[in-house]
Length: 491
Image (cartoon, rainbow, N blue to C red; front, top):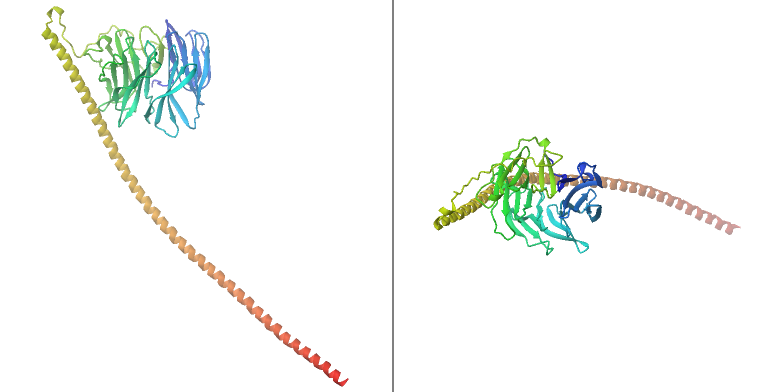
């Protein structure tokens, strides 16, 4: 299976390739040129890291280590400097999904933070450097127990930042976006982008083209299938469009990313066993054509590697590259892709300018509007069907919960009866024990009384004996007194 976390980061600038990577998450290494040995930047064990480059070629690197320390490294083209941004207390808090976008004015570091006492409540936070100090700001909150990254971050050529993120909306989620202006240095108010029905395998990717158009893909559900949805917004103020489904399968999609060339926009989707590719001409973004039917790429996933890519490649624009070339890191579907022709599924009849009359132009305009309305209705119906499918799924889950509730109630009643029987047995045993103790106490008391009576009998016998002796002694005394009297009389 293709590795999708702790990706090596490739920097391409002026035809030169640099690389930042963490072998087995032990330390961070920087390879400035592919023919040079890498330099060790960081020694500790790494949980996550990310890197970006500004318009001047300076690099910003953010590292979260195993002890909970969040570092920022900056490279000005000659030397690296480092800053400790935050020291986590891992017993009480957690950080994940760190991302960085570097502008000429400030690095912007985003991450998800939560208190350990609230397992599913995450806050999307940002650090950015403002007036010689670091400013910490909360962007949004989301309740989510799935192990996903609930946001995506992109940057345009004017160094404005685009944050696309999930937010709770009852049973489903909303996909919103906000823009950090390089001029005002403030975030805009959030704007609704689309619904998101299913987030168990949620992953998103976003690119801002050279005209400021926003291209966003994310993994969702369409009816009962797993799918990759795509939406395009020409500018911040342009009207909202409905998402289109690029590819859908019965097996879960685990990853998707975009890839822009001069003539095409490409999408790559990864399942557990296959890699799929679809494309669409850039010129037809606003037209009625659709994405090509996705085709499985004939590669062994053991030979494929996923990289994050930053900088200006010149020939293409992407955040991620799937490649089987560990030297040049070219996308596996780049070769010959610009020469292929996409056949639109909906054709508009070509009419020469000299043949067009106002009525025909009006009819074509009405047909285009009708198609757009039909497309909106179809998208709404698809959303309704998806919601109905999710409602059926939720009803089934509720049914299962009711069955579990009955089972637990039965177990509880059985436990209550068992407890009642045990309680009654304990009471009976306590009564028997109490009676036995009383009997023991009574026998002991009787024995003591008998002993006392025996002692009293002995004492009575002693008293009687003493009384008899006393009488004898008294008689003897009287006898002696009488003898003395007679002696006095006859002397």
